[in-house]
Structures are given as C-alpha cells and as structure tokens.
Length: 216
Image 1 (cartoon, rainbow, N blue to C red):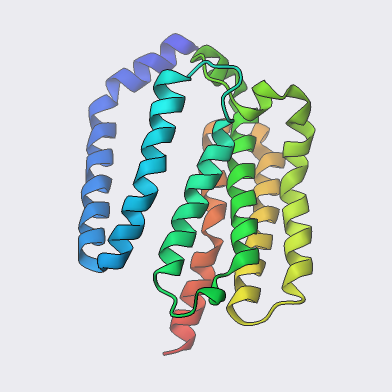
Image 2: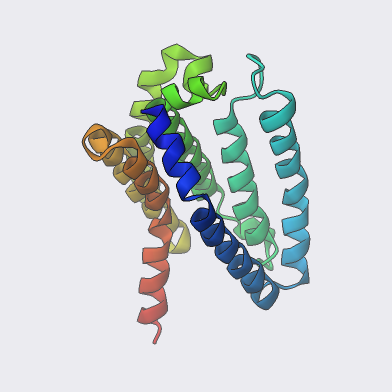
C-alpha cells in the first residue's frame, strides 16, 4: 500500500507542483492587487510566527515528544491571520468579533485534531507527533468537540445581533458539518474527509454571498 502511494506521488509530482505554482501566483497576484499597506504589514507580522512554527515543527523539534501540538500552532496562526486582517479594516477596535474568533480558533483546532485521528498511521510512518498521539486519551474529546462548538455557538448566537450573530451562526454550521464529516469519514475515506473538513470552514462564504447579493 505504501509502495503504491509513493509511486502515485512520484508519477504526479510535476502536475502537483504545477497546481501549487498556479495557486501561489494567483494568491500573490491577488494580494498585490487587493491589499493595502496596513494589510501587508499585518501579513508580515504573522509571517514571523509562521516561520518559527515551520522551523520548529518541521526541522528542529519534528520528533520531540514535548513539543507544542501542531494542531494548537495551526489554530493560533489561522486565528491570528483572521484577527490581524480584521483589525486593520476596523475604525473602532472594539468592533472586533471576539466571540466568533474564539469559535473560529476552536474550529481550526478541531479540524486539525480530527484529521490527526484519521491519519495517525501516516503520522507514525513519517515520524510526526500530533495531539492525539501525544495525548491518546484525548481521542474521544476531539470527536465530541465539533458537537460542543455547534451547541455553544447556537447558544451565543441567540444573544448576539448583526454581523456577530451571522458569524456565530456560521461557526455553528461549520461545527455541525465537521461532526458529520467525522461520522462519515470511514465510508468516504480519509483523503476525501480531509478535503471536506477543510471545506466546512468556508461557511462564512455563504453568508458573504447572501449579503452581497441582498444589497444589490
């Protein structure tokens, strides 16, 4: 099985590189076209901890049993990116969507932790550590977390209004969908489940499209 997988990666390495290069050029081009100076500065602030994470977790401490779980690091980096780019667009910092940001961080952690439960054999094969490998007793907690996020987000949404309520409802939707992906991952296969797990974090796009077309 491992030999077949390695052969597949070897045969498709150039096509994969081409897709990656196209995405990189598109992302850089869009950033140069759309982002202003303050947003570039926010991006540079996030670049430093990202480089520290890559250096620590992929090189220096790749197999260290006491390193900070990669799931926590990824959740921190993604949430920092969302918070940073949100702050530079707001005229009043108190408008920051604090509660939805907390739910987003939890969703990012749940996303990465669930993927680790599905791919624990892959992590072992590559000599990687993960949250579920470092803390084996956390496996059930990780699988329950999306349900907890969904229920808590629905509860908070009932006390919010405006964009905070919309963002919190998006978090509830992502939590429910993430739980569904986990329940069906054995039937769908871990590769498809991983793609779907990342896709469910895009529920705010639905709200954005609705608000965009509703204003026209």
